[in-house]
Amino acid sequence: MTTIIAEHQKNYKGNRLASETVPPVLFEMLRSFTVLARHLNLSRTQAELGVTRQTVRRHIDILEEVKGTKLFNIVDRQYRLTPAGAHLVAEAEALLTKAEAWLNDYVTSVNGLYLVKTQLDNGRWFYAQQHPVDQVWSIGVPLLKKGMQVWVSSESQLEHRMMRKIRPYIVVYRKHNGDWVCVSVGEKSSYATWLGWTWAKSAVGCSYKQDPIHSHADNFMVRAYDTAHETGSVWYDHVCTRFPRHEGGKLHPVNYQRLIFSCAFPNGQPAVAALVARTNHI
View 1: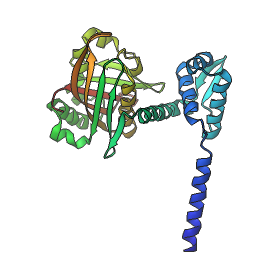
View 2 (view 1 turned 45 degrees about the horizontal axis):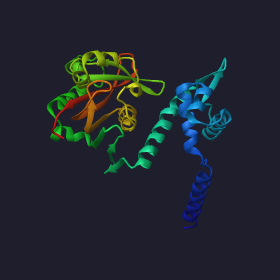
View 3 (view 1 turned 90 degrees about the vertical axis):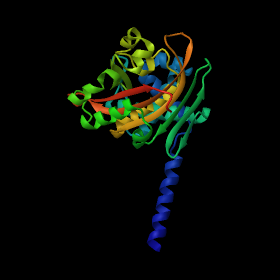
View 4 (view 1 turned 60 degrees about the vertical axis):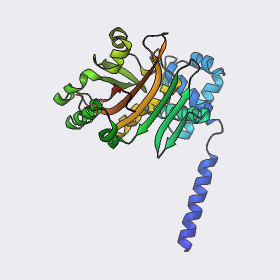
């Protein structure tokens, strides 16, 4: 009994000390970190945040002290993310996105799965519900069932011969500097058939955040790409939204089921692929 009490006291003290070390301006520090990681320029960072250069530097110094590692190196007056910084920036962005979602009350959790409900200022609305992956077999449309079978058969290798069966229908992304960059758009993919081949082809080389019809709801849903990548598995959801067919165009209702699965290039570099099927079966 004495040993149990001593262990409990030790854990309590450790938890109390840990909570006391959490900086009171953590949100602001994470914003400084992520914005500086995006611009790699102190002047542009302080201008976007509306704070002083000294404040940004202080936030980075505190984060580096707390994390016990350098986040940036400065070479010829230019900021460069360290390997540790590049690794941590995605986690920082995910924390900020989740905090924004919580504050704006547009993301909830149902049995541990995400439910997104948001109304945007431009008249666009976005509803997304994550489902257990095994429900693909019971409620998934044929294209998504085929995609699951191909993903398993190809052992998640992007250039496997089995993957050829769905390559025309998928959009492939590569992780670069903490963001997902489009590397290929299938000519029969929902992206290409909805937005048009010219626009779809122009998306190659652009990051997810550079999408002209990007929104803060998409900021949160990009977490699906990270989850699939980090867990080496599949994300399955249903989405109802309003989407233009071209930049600045009229909004049209669209419903779709989506699979996002982890895969790999021939050299072993990680990728994710999105397989979308527009359908009213949601």
